Amino acid sequence: MSGAASNKPSRSASAIVASTASGYHLLKIDGYTRTKGVPTGDKIKSRAFTLGGHQWHIDYHPNGNNSAHADYISLFVILDDTVTTAVKAQHKFRFADEVKEKDQAPSLTSETIYNYTSQNGWGTSTFIKRAELEKSNHLKDDSFTIRCDIVVIQEYRAEDFTPTAFVSVAPSDLYQHLGDLLKTEKGADVVFEVGGETFAAHRCVLAARSPVFSAELFGGMKEGSTAGVVRIDDMEAQVFKALLCFAYTDSLPAETKPEEEDVMYQHLLVAADRYNMDRLKSICEEKLCNYIDVGTVATILALAEQHRCEGLKKACLHFLGTPANLRALLDSDDFDHLSRSCPSIMKKLISMLAFT
Image (cartoon, rainbow, N blue to C red; front, side, top):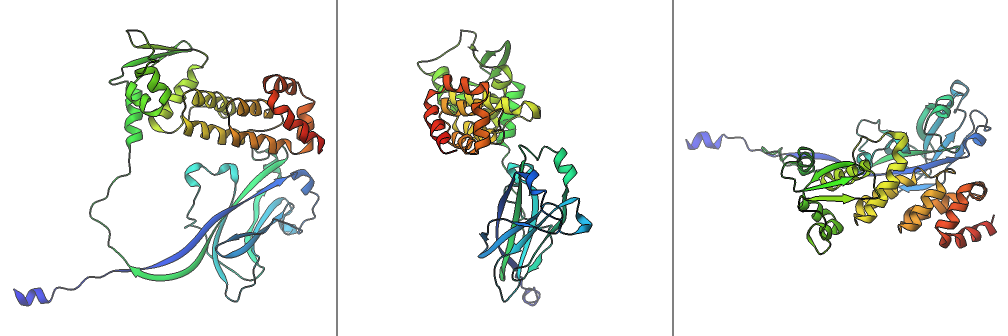
């Protein structure tokens, strides 16, 4: 027995790990139509940015980088440093509005690793045809934004490696179980009447998610009849349904039509402020920043001012920092509504007008 035991092979494991630095750069093309006058082969350089200990910039070719690609927009990421050893890196160009929240930090594992030498780079000659861009929703108010993700491989190192565990723990699915609880109405102990529709829910869940719900359902502000029905005025049924979905799952439902999203986010922001649900309010603020244009800026700015949304307010004022946008607002009927509903914002707009 002792002889057999001595012949048992020893086990060890190690791994070779690529140490990386990752990030992204947003390049906004503002005034796209005017950039179309740049000749084929010529480029416009972005501002330099630092990532992974190196300086980079993006070359934007509005009419292609050569005659073979004159119908395309070409994009290249350039190493702006002087280096003695090539820098290994991966990159990926996308429209910024295509990037979902769960993809904010992509690994780029499927992308090619390129060697970047001094003042040289890699990219794509065929990012998109201009004709396709001009028909797409990416181009808005004569501008679009490109996101360039970069992963810089800094070094390779060897380290100890722990073999795969025998037990795999599944990710949390609490949000799914709570969502099912809302959907099935199992154990519901309160009913809300909103916009002619009724919604069954659970007092404890809502109280845990909102101090306002907690006060209304359990505290001195307790609402509802003996039958447990709470009537909510000044809110649409679909908005309250989305509010409930977020309260149970910490995410928004995917039922809203794209053309109705901006209006839904406006109503949902008001509801989130009403029930003191700060994370939901912030999400709505962030979403509405993408819908600011000449036709919506007055409404969104008034909403931001009335509900103390400083980030959204700054985004509106940044948009109005362009003289043409500010002039369009001043010449519109929306300006009269804005001056009546939010007189406090007028001083800021007047001071901006003085510098145009």
